[in-house]
Amino acid sequence: MTVAYNFDVCSSTWRSVTKILLRWRGSVWKSVASELLFWSLVYVALFVSLTYLLNEGQLENFKQIRPILDKCLPRVPLTLMVSFFVNLVYNRWKDIFNKIGFIDDIALSITQLINSDTAETRIVKRKIVRYAVLTQTLVFRDISLSVRQRFPEIKSIVNAGIMTENEYQYFDDHSDINPKYWIPIQWAMRLIWRERSETITICNDMIAYNLCEKLHRFRGDLQLLCCFDWVPVPLSYPQIVFIAVRTYIAISMVARQTFSNENWILNIFVVFIETLLHIGWIKVAETLLNPLGTDDDDFECNFVIDRNLMVGYEIIDGVGMPPLHDKDVSTRPIDKYDTGHGYIGSVADVDVLNMERAGDRSATHHSIARRRRRSNLTDRPERDEKTVAASVQETNAPGLNAPQLHVVMEVSEQCSTSSIGSKKNIEKTE
Image (cartoon, rainbow, N blue to C red):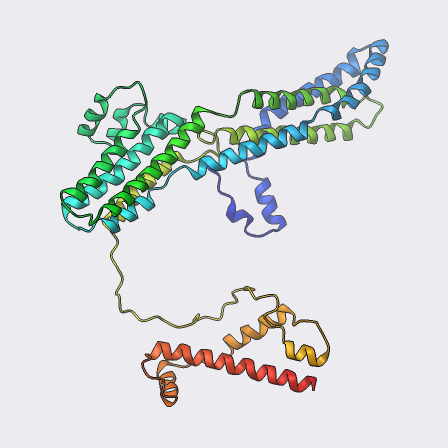
């Protein structure tokens, strides 16, 4: 399924490029191999026929036809057609991924807004999460072939533990005329309002409405996935693009033919590269056209189902809280690691007074300003909280604890350092 290669491109070097190009799973080489082999055989067959099978008259006729076909090739708007088609398919692919659905928001809201830790309430919370995942499983089972292969029947969902036997009986009693994706979501919403009206574990109606709204949003995303599967890209659009690409390649097989007395090796190489690029370009669109299939780069729908169920249960069960009164380790980074070039305003380091006196409008270079600020942060000696407290007590700053005093002293020291630097600049210009 999904091919991960981000680590291979963590730096823009030739080594990273080589790693990407040498990949096979999910690569352009794998997608174009069979079709590129077919067109290569077609080109070689035409070349052999022209060289050994045609007589002089037939060869002269072909020499008259070939330049005409070569002039007609640029008339095919192949670049425009394929560009628009790939852009359309990519935007559709991106929208499908954004609607794939993750359980985290629902589980976190349920954990925090249903105020009870009893065993019965915990069962209710887990059921709400499971019903949401059950809805997602039912939808994926109808639009993703990999999920359908995993759950060929509704009974297999029961065997996987996403649905119980009693729930299956209630679910099976309803008519099968239309998809029954809404049933588990309705069960989850009824549980929410039961917690509000009967057990009072939800303190007001707004919280219950908020939880139901999150379920509505989750169901709405799944509904859009069904709509994407129900109404694909109009059939005539991919048909005309696929026909245009293959027709262009077929004509180029004839128009790019060479003869034994010409530089045929270079010509064959150029034709091979051109065919590879055209086929690879259209294969990108074919791969993105249905990301819920079984290609190497299609979405991991089975992983999403398993992940949502496990993470949802873990959120409901809770992970505990760290001690509340732990003190912060430091008020600034404890190491001196170079964090890179942070944001500095474009005129933040301009000394206006110095510029006016010197009659110069050139500003301080950002790299110099960054080095100055980094040296101010890293070269100063560390001071413990007792020293900070003693220093601030002399200034009569009441009501501040040790960490707050530490921050106050750092700010005052930065102000004094910047004022001294500006004074030195003024003295130099004078």
